[in-house]
Image (cartoon, rainbow, N blue to C red; front, side, top):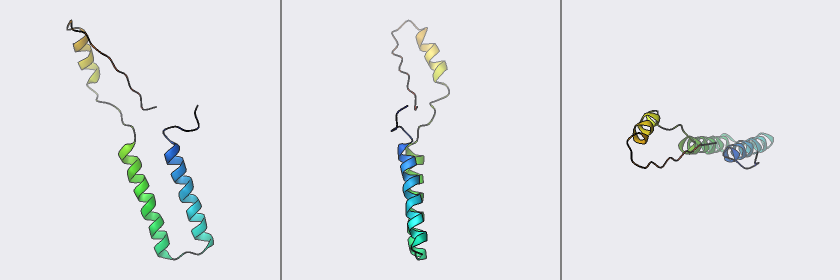
Length: 82
């Protein structure tokens, strides 16, 4: 398995936020810095939710079976988010 994969961004973001939270704790940072960190974490969560892989359409198999039997050439392309 490759070290860099689809979850690398997620793990780096979690680790980076943890390091920043540790530094903020050790420095006894004011509340506005904690709010800024919370905003960054929420932004990263929204970015991950927007670009994460999702399953395909559920009726794709029925459409594929119908087009294979119709007598015309069919190009089949299979993709996996993993």
